[in-house]
Image 1 (tube, rainbow over the protein chains, first blue to last red):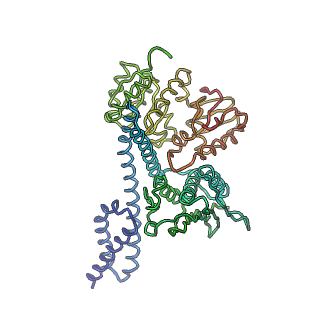
Image 2 (cartoon, rainbow over the protein chains, first blue to last red):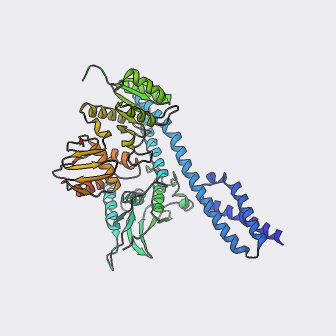
Image 3 (tube, rainbow over the protein chains, first blue to last red):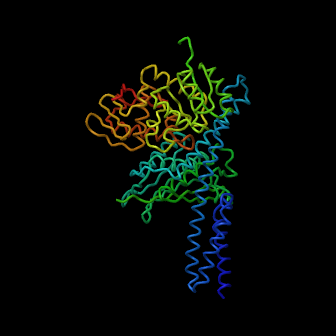
Amino acid sequence: MALALAGAALMAGAAAVAGALAGDRRSLVIEAAVPGIAAAAAVVLAVAAGMTLVVDRRRRRAESELRAEVSEEAAVEHRRFLARLDHELKNPVTAIRVAVAASDVESPQLATIDAQTARLSRLVGDLRKLSELQTSELERSRVSVGALVTDVVDAIRDAFGRDVSVTLPAAPWPLPDVTGDPDLLFVALFNVVANAAKYSEPGDVVEIRGDEQRGLVVLDVADTGRGIPADEVDTVFDELARGSNARDRAGSGLGLALVRTIVHRHGGDVAITSRQGHGTRVRVELPAAAV
Amino acid sequence: MTSSPPRLLLVDDESSITDGLAPFLARSGFDVRVAADGQQAWERIAEWHPDILVSDVMMPVLDGRELVRRLRATGDTTPTILLTRVGESGERSAALDEGADDYLNKPFDPQELVARARAVLRRVAAGAAPLMSSQTLVAEGLRLDRPARRVWRDSDEVSLTPKAFQLLEYLMTRPGEVHARERLLSALWGFDFATHTRAVDHRVAELRAALGDDAAAPRYLETVAGVGYRFCATVSRA
């Protein structure tokens, strides 16, 4: 009996690991950590099963601890990967830029190499920034959401020549402030709205709507643009992910990864809803500052 | 122009970089020599006395940060550009602790390195170089205490966010130079892409409000139309 329970628990443990893995798209990063964790899980769960009849409760707790451990380890390993990538890319990219600058000949090919290497340089810089942001200390100022939105709308007009329609509540009171780094929050919202502008046509609608729900400030950025293919919606927040219908627009594939990192570091969340050919809505939720 | 070109010692263990960078710098008007690590650089400096040092940070034997620390410890003030970012070591006042005169993050634009090297040399020629290693900077009633991260205007302490302090420190240690917004964003915020330079304008506005500086008739922070900002008051060490 105990043996059967232990066996069942072991399988459940393995299933939990598999579930956690399926939930995380960075399978390459996680695979290395699996055997050790799976073994540990098996031991933990088997012991729990053999000991008592309150197997279920303990198993559930063990599973959730395991899941937390897997995702924490994956996050640490992912940060290390970004740091290694930065380290391994910066010298070769510098060498190419320098070699191009030192060349005497002028040719369209060389100009292309120069432009593309400059682009690669920025990409390396932003990958580094992304990895730093996951652990760096954040400024904690009070940020007015209204001012933030106004700022972003001005910057979008400046950068894309597009107008954004904004609906923020004025009654019964305006949106509460949020707490955080004003520059990073600007970068996050700017990126979301810039995507809406980039992947829609001049006649399309781009809206920002604000709301307050259960202690959260909710900002919806919606557009009637081209949308994201259904099977790609889940991966758009990953580093370097670019929609298959987004290739005609310049982009690094880092914008939404940056958005996600910044929003998470502020204790918030971001989600995307999209229908190809109809439009996209990105919902950013941030904890409201205490009044 | 003086008759002899400034002597520049380039220190990097990556020959793929020095092979191209040395001739490029030579063509840009420098007399260039190369060292492959900090120890070699240490020896070259003693025998050759370069006017400026451009050094990578991560190197075998003796790294770039340690090289600058050792030089400064012996009273050697050879101006130095480190090929990394300000404060990348995690210290809040890394620039001051290390004694480097400027920073440039890899991968960099080689033209930008030339511009920085020239700016550093100009600063030295103008006698402004000691600003970079000063604990306290003063300019027309403004007083910036770098280790304490505090600012006073006349006798009143001014409250600044950490980023605004960093920006003021950066501009005050490089007075009279025009800094492009993009450059400031990259050097102080670490953003090269995926954003807008508005963050810079905001911190300048914060500084102006805190310092009581009028954008139309600036005492400290001047807007250079279409480019960026310049600290326009004369700065000296306290």
